[in-house]
Length: 204
Ligand code: HEC
Image (tube, rainbow, N blue to C red; front, side):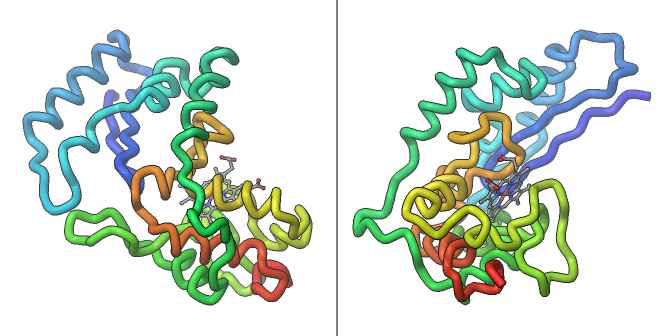
């Protein structure tokens, strides 16, 4: 059996994979799949054809099966880190209540969205003890601030990780919410507060 999959995660992440029983060169299978999508897909609303383009990070992660050589990983992580736009007012903490709504909202980046809807965090992470339904691709975020500390460095890490997860872990499966403009600066501040405010349900 042979099949090729295309998954479009929030913000234009394109993952192309092919099944092991296909004896052809995977690079060629990918190229054929891409040609097919470029031919058949139509851009609509905010879902443009640019979503089919691999950037340097996705190209390296695809090429090296999510494990590029250390020097390349370090170089690309540094480049990704440089893309993070820190809030001009220097404040990283917004309103955790708004953050909770964003974390539990799975909508965003659809062709008819205007951008800045939900973060889908619950799809991969446990958020707080009261979350009954959540995915486990990512680690549990329950007591994130309580365990890691509430200091400015961890605040900065939380904001930066949400903005561009691949700056910290190149082939992370987590979408780059700020980088691809899936979330606004205010929304990322609200999510940082959700993780870092001692009063937030995350830290109970
Ligand atoms: C598609 C799955 C996915 C989604 C959606 C996702 N994450 Fe993640 N996240 C991960 C994975 C996997 C990791 C662990 C690997 C890594 O560090 O990249 C992670 C790691 C993290 C970390 C670092 C945890 C630590 O202990 O250092 C934070 C913070 C985080 N995510 C916050 C969020 C927030 C907030 C959202 C919603 C805006 C979110 N994530 C959405 C998959 C996801």
